[in-house]
Length: 291
Image 1 (cartoon, rainbow, N blue to C red):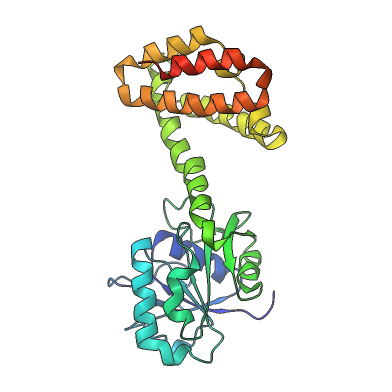
Image 2: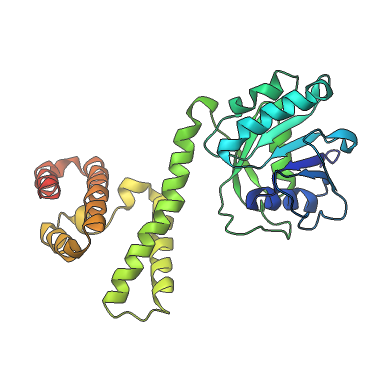
């Protein structure tokens, strides 16, 4: 690792505390924290970090400012930092980074106009609680907008993470993919678990059964691609089974509608994998679109 960075954390969110803990564990110095509410300094960097009274970094002299507030507050914090510390930022090599997966670094334009380098870092993992043992970025894929050479990527690598670049102009597509892969999957597994419970499956076994199935599916997708890995009644063209599924969901119109939409997307995959089954696919689509 090159010379350790001096980190200031603006916002003690779960993601912010976790990333700061990873940076601290990798040998970087968390020198200051600032939060919009009055809370203590958590985690393994509590002893060495000063609590800033204002947004101005002051004597803490950070080389990296990590903005870890909610998406709707990032622009506000960047604007306040530019107003209160714009002169301080000018002429320095300070890197200002936010943790949003959806917003690009452009939201930090107020500080870039003051001379700061800007970027974004979005770890592809869930932070349902702060991770303070230094492992938050270990073996984690992290989307980065790294305009300061490879400085941000180097930070991620120092924590054991795997940085990959995303285009600023299409970052929403990236975040949409992440949300569908994680958040929507969680919702689907919740519905699947409820249906298994209705079928009398032991509640303690359900998470294990479903997780093993999902892991096998993911392995197949990684190895063969989504279209070729597709199995099940839509891949087979089993209209009778699909009819039974839709009938079973009559008691839950919301889940039934979700089934129709997801089945339609699944059918599109099947059409790409097996264009020779066009007639069968058309019959399936007509059934999915019928009331």
